[in-house]
Image 1 (cartoon, rainbow, N blue to C red):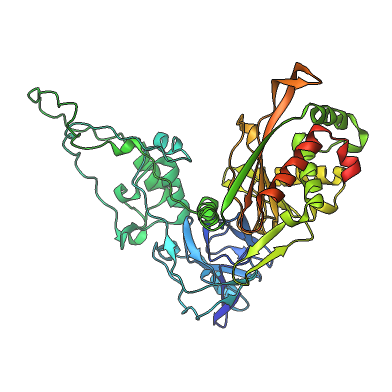
Image 2 (image 1 turned 45 degrees about the horizontal axis):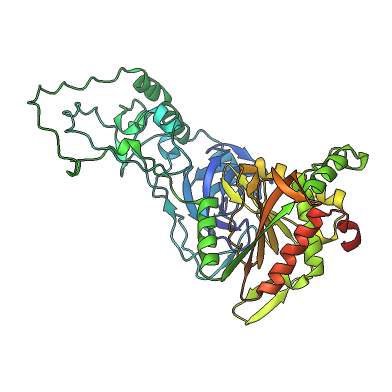
Length: 480
């Protein structure tokens, strides 16, 4: 976890905060060079392929150097911060020279990486791949930065010849291709929409200060020279390609973190497990009535009671009646692994992307206990505090697409699982009930399963059992 580079300095390495992860992005530093830290103090927040995690330092001392700036993707096992401990802490506590406070974009760990997987904070990381920095983006106006969408919006429009470029502003001294500035100054420039390459430094050794950034932000924009009137050109033909495209109407979003992991997992699942999806439309009027009754029950006071709770319980009952559905395919051993426990995954949309935390041993929980676990799972996911451990070891999953008004879908299996249930929107529809057409609460369920170990008969039985429980919730008592 730590490496002694001399008698008073310790190097803290990027840990594997989730078993098997190989890299993480530094989202935010909570300390700067010269700060005093204590054992257990959180020094930074990183985003892995599964979640955002805060990293505590394992010893007392004074921060000597941050090896990477915010936004850098670092391999597990690479040193990210140097801390002076013992006798060296006093010397490190002296004022830090601004010239060395800057963090080079190409900073690398000083010590060589040993071959093979090395023990780190949690689990074991790998050290064979190289550290990568997120590509730099061109300067953007604040409004353009705020309008950047999480989804890539690809739209290309042609435009005419560009006007003559404005005179270039004096460039700041740089180290390599980066102007010299402290991390807080870089953040200030980013927030104000100031390109550091255009800022004239006033600090020692050519370092840009906060005052320099504020001065650059206050300067009026240099008006562009007006192009001379040009002769009116004939309109291009409808089939003619535009001379150029307006790239300001596009936003490129780096694929990383949760989105990167989700994409890799879904591609692997889609092209590894042969998917089959079956559908059933069911009258859930009685289930909706039971939900309202449970909301008034004192035993459920303060708990999250909604249709998803009873759908989850219905699936658990169906798995109990058809245990072979709760299994996984071991390709290496050529075996089917039947699980005698259910870790029930619930797909949750979060600002960081889609994650699937699971309720451990959901099969052993009573309905009130299941309600409490569901409520805790959803709240934690929305707050972005879901731990990597909460997303490991799932055996079967529910995805509720109905909350978006969608009738149904064909869900893709989570890797290592054999079934996933999609729940569509519950709507009031005309339905034949007791020989008459009446308005009833109706929904459509879709069950996708791995056809290597789940045949059509087993998949159909599970889906039919879920539908039967939701149509007649009293079956929960007799079947559970």
